[in-house]
Length: 181
Image (cartoon, rainbow, N blue to C red; front, top):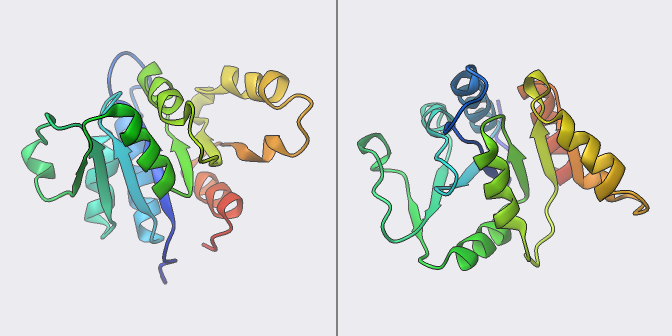
């Protein structure tokens, strides 16, 4: 399968706190699926590191980069993953936004959404956001987006997409970013 060059996805997923017991499986599936299609994954250490997505993406031959602070010590399994160390959190979030084509949010704890919020708050870079709404994890957020966030703003709803499975997630990411799968 030919890889589409240039697609970089900022992945937000957390394995911290209570939540769906299938999170690791969903993260692994998404990481491998995106990597096999040539997407580069970048992620933050804030809010929890999506280890299953990172390891499965790398096992599938994908590129992964971790944006972190100066004190983060990666687990041994990630010792060869490139780290982008930026001490200032706002600058780290700004650079992540500048380098990605879109944000992908996988089910997890509230740490995932909190990390996305901080990364996009005050950013000059508007990026589309695609949520994997596995088991309706983001149903409340979906309602908020359609009823509040995009109300009265024609076309803004296209920047927020919700997918039901990993294949649909890739399809929406490809469409919203203009990359072919």
